[in-house]
Each structure stands twice: as structure tokens, then as C-alpha cells.
Image (cartoon, rainbow, N blue to C red):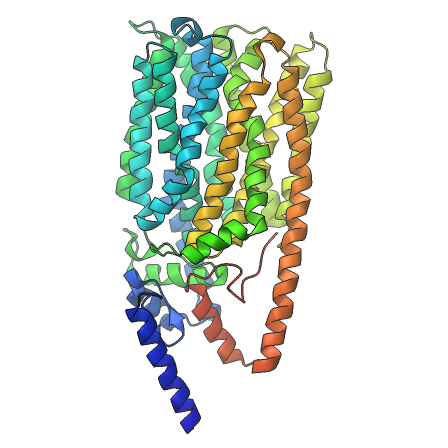
Length: 528
């Protein structure tokens, strides 16, 4: 080694020690490689055993993925089932007499639908930052437990003010659910695997719609001392809190501490995340990443997507039973007709995941746009069909659920295209921030005097769906533009430094776990 090389190495070591003592970087394992300080040893061991992806045995990786699927997807999926059943409780309470019992005025029900999201809106960003500082599974489980408790408390409501206050608190407790699910998925699955895994747990949304129908039908047949709608809140809330205990016991906080996996499996679990180039875990909030999240134009595109994607959701989730009842069905049959609606959602999401997996790499935005077409057709058909075309209008209403598939795949655009833990938490929060506003606004398009066709409500769905369809193409061109910029910068850097294969492997290990943002990481490639 030359004198200049020795001097350079000593300078790098000195600089690393100074930065570490100042708390500016995570614990270093070797000069230039920064790893999560809490579990640095196992991350270092994973890099040593698997210095590049060619050292990973495909059969071992397949076995690991199957085991991860068995351990993670059911926990998240069943939680998401209760998550959506919770959203439909008010909808079923509407046909079980809550309006009469609580003396709700003409707009009070719409406010109860929307006010839930005010709590979510206020707590979405703070809750995400708190989760980064906390063990994510424990924080998620605790929030879901209290969410169930507050849902049960709504059964005791005597007036609009009491139930409105409880719904605000419930919304705050639920604010962390979707971002936490997205974070956990991104910690254990590669970017290519994330769309299908997000689709798996999100498909329980549709099962929740169908399950809500069965639960609603069963509760409607209870002849007890309480009104049926009060049993709805008690039973669903108790189930949510019970499942939260399962999450606390079995959902992992980190790949390094995942119970039920051998040490070798944990090393492989960590090493295969290198290809994501988005980092895995870091419990320090990096304010530079927070600033980058707020000045990145893509953050606001995701926020707008959440907004226009959930104006339809806010209306459909709270007024679907009233729309179906308006087609001439009695209360119990209305509850049962919610089942096909949920089945269609599962079919849409499953079909989207399968099609996306079988298409070339960068097809996600095209699949998202494709599945907006049935919902646009359904909304248009519902508006134009004659009043007595009950079956046709019901089928058109079921078709409007295909937007769920597009929204699910769009979530994978966030987990796959956002690097840096703090930035990822903020961007995830922003799409749900927009979703909150959309869910607040959505119910007010459904005017009671326009029942049963709800022309304004269905028209709002149609306009939002068309905007969402166009937005997916905007995302596609934005990611292509960013990739082009990165390729040009990386080629220029390689030409100036020399393109040595060993240095490139070292660079990939350095950037994979260094908690760099997508803009900071020269090896990051956007998928679309």
C-alpha cells in the first residue's frame, strides 16, 4: 500500500470516529459502511456471509419467503379484516336504527362518517414519527387495542356529541394502521414481492366488506336487551382488541429479533433486502430526510392520489348499505347483499396482483390505470341506468369497487420508491393524510334528498376515478424522468472513478443499509 493510500485510509477512519462520537451516523462496521446501530453485529455478519446476491441460494430464499408469508400476511390480513369491518359498523348501524335512537339530524350521519377522519388527520404525521422511535409491532398493537376499546365505547353513546367525540379518538388510534402495514411489508419483502404481499393483506378489506355483511345479518337477528346497532359496536370492538393482543405477541419488530426464525434465516432475511436499496430499520429521526420529504414533488402527488382515491371510498364505505337498500331491498337482505360487494373487491385485488406479477418489471402504473376502467364504467352505468333497472344498477355499483385494486398497487409505489426510514414514514403518512381529507369530503356528496340514486355522490366518484386514471400516467413519466437523471449521474461518476466490479459490490452493500433516501442513494432505481 502506498503512502498516499495509507494516509487516505487513516483519514477515513478518523472521520468515521469523529462522526460516530458526534452521533451523526449509525455504528460503523468498516470505513464507509454504516449500519443500524441497534443490531449492527447481525447486519455485518449478513454482509460477510452474503457479500452479493449471487451467494444467496434460490431454494433457501423460496423457503424463507414461504415462512415469512405464513408468519406475517395472516397477522396483517386479519387485522385489516377488522379494520374494514370497523369502517362498515356505522354503515350497518344506519340500517339498524342509530339515526332514530340518537336523534341524528339530516347532516349528522354524514358528519359521523367524516369526523372519524379528523382524529386520523390530526394524528397521522405525529403517529408516524412516534412509530419510527418505537418498536413498530408494539406500537401498532397498542393502537389497535385502544381502537377496539373506543369502538366498544360507542355502543354506550346517548347522543350525537358523545359518539362524535369517540369517533374522533378512534380515528386517531387507527391513523397508524396502514403506514405500519406498509413499513412492515417493506422490511421483509423485496420491491418485486411487495405488490403481491400488499395485495394479500389488503384483500382482507374485501373479506371485511363481505364479513361485515354476515356480521351485520347475524347481529340484525339478535333479539336482546340492546338495540342491534349497539351490539354491532360491542362485538366488532371486542374482536379488534383481542386481535391486537395477537399482534403484540407474534408480529416482529425487527428482522434481527424475529421469533421462530433461526440465526441463519435472519442473516438471509437481512441480506436479501440489499437489492431494495431503501434500508431496513432506523429508530433515529433524520430531519434532513423530513425536509427532503416535504420538498419532493412526488410526496404531494401521493398525497393527491390519497385524496382523489378516497373521496369514492368515503362515500361507498358509509353509504353502500343505503344505496343498496334504496334499490328496494329490506334491512336483512341489504346486509346480505354487502357480501358480493366484498367478494368482488377480493377478485379485483387478486386479479391485479396476478396480472402485475406476470407482466414485465415496470408495469405497475399501467395495471393501476387498467383497473380504473371498470369502476369508471360502473359509476357511469349507475348514473345513466333507469330507476327501475334494479339488478343492472346493483351490478354497476359492485363494479365501482375495482378502484381498490389500483389503490393497493399504488401503495407499493411508495414502499418501493422511497428510501430512508424517516422519509418513508413521512411519505406514507402523506398519502393517508390525503386519504383522510378524501374520506372526510366523500360522504357529503351523498345527499339524503337524492336517495336512492345519489347522483351527486356517484358523479363525484366518476370524476375522481377519471383523475386517478390520469394520475397513474403522471407517476409513470415522473419515475422514468428520475431514473434517467440517476443513470446519467451514475455514468458520469463511473467514468471519472473507473468502473471496477469489486468497488461496485462494496458500494451496493454500503448504500443498501445506510438509511439513505432515494435521492441520496446513487444506486437507487425507481420502479413504475
